Image 1 (cartoon, one colour):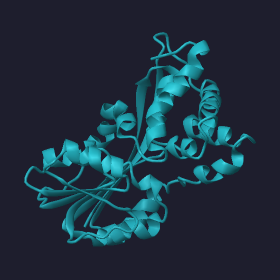
Image 2 (cartoon, one colour; image 1 turned 90 degrees about the vertical axis):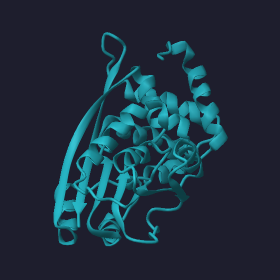
Image 3 (tube, helix red, strand yellow; image 1 turned 120 degrees about the vertical axis):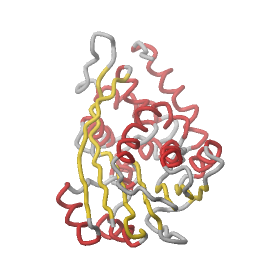
Image 4 (cartoon, one colour; image 1 turned 180 degrees about the horizontal axis):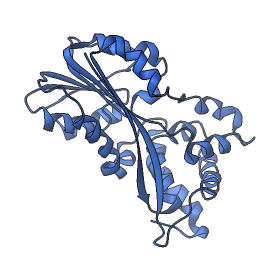
Length: 278
C-alpha cells in the first residue's frame, strides 16, 4: 500500500510493531510477505539440480520452510533436514512441514551426521564469509553424484544497498551502524567460484539472473528489505532512530526508483546461481 507523505511517520511506526517483538531476530511473517517472489529463484535453482536419486537432502538456511517445501515436493521419499540459525524461522518451518526435520545451527560450523545427496542453500550463503574454505568443505559432505546447489543475492552494488550504506553514514548513528555495514561482503565473480569448485566436482554450472519484481512504490521496496537486508541496521538502532533511518532511506531510494503510471516500481534483483556436482 502506498502512503501519502503526511502519513509516512505512521507507516514507519506500524512497520516496527512486528520487528520490536523480535528485535534482532528474523521475522518469518515479514519475510513471507513476498513469498512467491522469494521462492521463484529457489525453484529455478532446484530445477537445474542434476541429481535424481536423493535419499538425504539438507536445506542450508531453510528460513520459514518455503524452500524446504520445494525439496519435499521434488524428492518425496527423501529424508530432509533444514538448518537455520534463527529459532523463529525454525519454528515456522516446523509448523509448515511437520514431516521434515529442522535444527537450529550456524552454517559455517555445521557438520552433517552423514553425507548428503543434496546440499541446498537458497539465499543464505551471502551472509557468510570465507567461501573459499566453506564451499569446498561442503563438497566433502556429499556422496558421489551429489550436488551442492547455491543461490545468492548479488545486489550490493544496486541502489537499494548503496542507499543503506549512505544513510548509515549519517553522523546520528554512523558509529553504531559500522558493524551493520560489514554484515555482508561482496561475492566473488563466476570465475572465482568455478575455479574454487572445479577440483572438487565433475561438473560446475554457474549463471547469474536479474529478476525484476513489481513492488508497490518506494514503500514496497522498504517492505521487501525489512525482511532481509535492513535487519542488521534496524537491530542496531533505538526505537526512536528506526523511523528516522527509514525516512532517510526512502528519500534516498526515491532518487533511483521512479514509480510507473500505476504507482508500482520495478526492483531489479540480480542473483548468482552455483551448482557443483561431485
